[in-house]
Every structure is written in C-alpha cells, then in structure tokens.
Image (cartoon, rainbow, N blue to C red; front, side, top):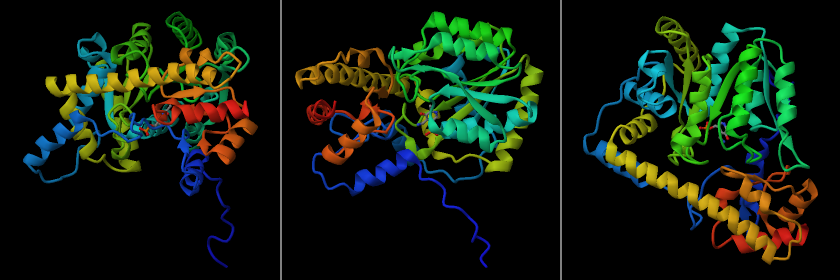
Length: 398
Ligand code: PMP
C-alpha cells in the first residue's frame, strides 16, 4: 500500500481552473475576464517603465546574492511604511510600526495569521461575504475558525452596511476582522468614508482586531486616497495589521512582492512584535527573495522613478474607469434594457455583474467570454478591441 493511497484529490482552484478552460478554448474571439490581472489596451500584461528603468540601473552594477535579513530589505520595509502610513506620520516616526517584506500580499496575510495564532489562539476570524477566495483558506490553515460578516447586497447592488455593522457588533471581543482596505474583491463595492468611521467605532468598542488587506492601493481613487483608511484606524489608537501587495500596482505578479505591517502601542512593543514576525518568517521560508523587493524599493525611494510609477499607476486606474463607462454604454447600445450603470459605482479591478451562474456558463460555452460563476468579471482585462464583443455576448445571455 502506498503512503498516499488515502490522499484525496483536492478541488481545483476555481480561478486557475477557469484559466485552464480558457487556454483550451479554440474560439478565436475568446476573452478572459476570470483572473484578477490588469492588461493594457492591447491586451498585454504591462512591464512598467519605472520597473524597467530600475532594473537597468541594477543590472549595470551586478551584485552577488547573499541572504536577506529575515524581515527583508530595510529600504523596502521603510518605503512600505511611508507608503501605507505616511513618512511623516507620528505612528512611523515614533517607531510603532513593524513592517516585514513578504512573499506577495498572500505572504503578508499568512505571516500575520501565524503571528495572530500565537497572540490570540482562541480568536475567531471574520471575512466578508463574499471575499477573496484565499482569505478563508489562509486563516483556516493557520488554525482559525473562520466565518463571515454580511457585505454584499445583491438586490441593492451595493453593500449591506447595516448587516455588516450588525455582524461586527455581534462578534466576540478579540475577533479578527479581515477588511478590504479598498477595491473590494470580488464585488467592486467599497464602503464610504463615513461608514469606515462607523466600522472603526465598532472595532474599538468591541475590542476587535482589524486586519486590513491592501492589495489594490492606487487602483481606487489614488495612492494617498486609498491609503487614508489606514490613517483612520491609526488615529483611533487601534493595533492593526496591514498586508500590502505590489503585484498589481507594479505589475510584478510573479516576483511576489508584498509586506505585512503591524501597529503596536509603543516602540518597545513594536520591537517585540517584530521579533515574533521574524520567527513566523523564519519557520515558513527563512527569508524573502531579493529581486522584486529591490526593484520596488528602488522605485519608491527615487523621486524620478517614483513620479513615473505614480503616473503609470494613474494610467491603469483611469483606463479601468474608462472601461467601466464603456461597458455601461456598450451594453446599452447592444440592446440590454436593464440599467447597468451600477458598474460605474464599483471601484478597482472587478465588477460583480449581477449575472447568474447559468448566464456565466452560457457566456463561456457559447461565446468564449470567461468570468467566474459568481458573475465576477475583471474590468481590467477589457480593452477597446474586445469590449464590443463582450457586450454583444452579454446582451445575448441576459
Ligand atoms: N488580497 C486580495 C483581496 C487579492 O485580491 C489578492 C490578489 N488577487 C491578494 C490579497 C494577494 O496578492 P498577491 O498576489 O500579492 O499575493
């Protein structure tokens, strides 16, 4: 008998499974709106100019590759702190933030989850309903019981904010609440500034632990605008967790560049927290890889490259917004009678289209237009060449 004879086949990752199906599809008009990846108007994955410039400089003086410190490149960690909390913020200046380089945003979540399991072993975790698929799995694998808080209201086409508040109010003290800092994945619906204030008040009153997942900073309203929510939590005097991903904002998906930041109550506490984050990293993968972090640090810490990055990120953000408007207009032109203008009230890379599972299956099988069964479509994969076809296809199934 084999050691593995009782090993069960794990379910396929829903998104990656969709990709395989897309790759095998022979329809010449096929469009992949499944994965959360930004493509330019030519349907190409961008290689940002700022990244190319940083790499060129790096290649001009080749360096040997020793191990990085466990918490990563110092200049990178400091740049992340400045980006997320503000370089001149009290919380950074007073040494209350511990930031570690992580393997993508996923790595930041995982390191944070492992650390939290030590700090609050009996805490429950709440994720939004619905949420990014991996949130549940990451916290379950770290040993937590995970349930959800109300979020999406299909009928209203927006956030069930009363439900969300009620879920948070009903949570036991110490519950870890995973919040999407901006550009909610998968729905595309964010809460307003005033609603964030209410969430923060409940988090504080009920002694909940906020874990803010910031995978799309700069894709909503702007880098500083999207980051402002973090400042609100800090101003409320809360000890928070923030995971950062540069996968989308630097188009560096495969380099796995991310971070975890934890806000402690004072400098001494922050150094104890950092020592434990290092244990979590050391026992998972020892220390992070160099290249992606070095590129991002080089860009963020150089005023010219930084300005170029901001410009390129703004172009991505503006193009997605234009695609949202075009989607609404072209669906109307294609004969869709129902009001689809809610698509422009959504933000970030995704749209919950409101299409049913049956409609999504028909879109795939009859037209080669791939989105998830939940009706999620990646607006960032639409372009001036494929959008009319996508709209004509949607019009036929709706
Ligand atoms: N959180 C959310 C909400 C995401 O959508 C993603 C990426 N799709 C991540 C985290 C993970 O990012 P990364 O690819 O950098 O690990």
